[in-house]
Image (cartoon, rainbow, N blue to C red):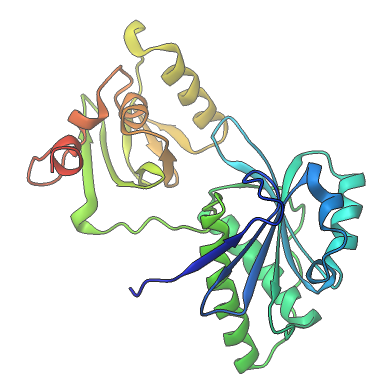
Length: 277
């Protein structure tokens, strides 16, 4: 893939404040707004444009951020409504066109597509109660909107929320963790260790498992991410752990060093592949 150039402008020189982010070769512009800084963007003209927005709140027990996705013909007005009516969020990220060439039908389609992708990829807790209606577009307009969305994915990940980043499942990055009844396959990436759907984890927890891993397994069961099937636990969807050791602790039901127990098909450990290069 070719490289991309991303510009980030900080209007008040506060790196934790408002940020304006764009791609050099794109019409898509992101406006990152901490909730406490909402008044500071009121004088910006671009925040009055039509676009799509994301309200983002703290991470839940599964380390997934709360996210609400919406669209508006006047972004500032809509965000102010949410400031009065929604409690969970602390950050808003708005996306507009530098060329001002997106309309109501475009942003309705974008809203629907973004919600569908967020549900499918499942790296956030989506706060939308219903899936937004998809607008009717011509073939060329659909291509335009999907290209716009591709750049949204890059910018929102750059701003710290990779909610649309899918696991690649490339054979060269495949790692295996084995135990008594456990057999898990996963991938190591920037986000941590992703254990793939269908992987098996040990069911019985010995006293040495550790409280953190035991509690996380309970949450995963409650959320139906893992399910008890006969004498094992089965992953019912891909799930990304923040570290290889947390992943292997859950899979093996025991305290472990993930850098040593995750191995590729040649028997090389994660440590050998990534830390001893």
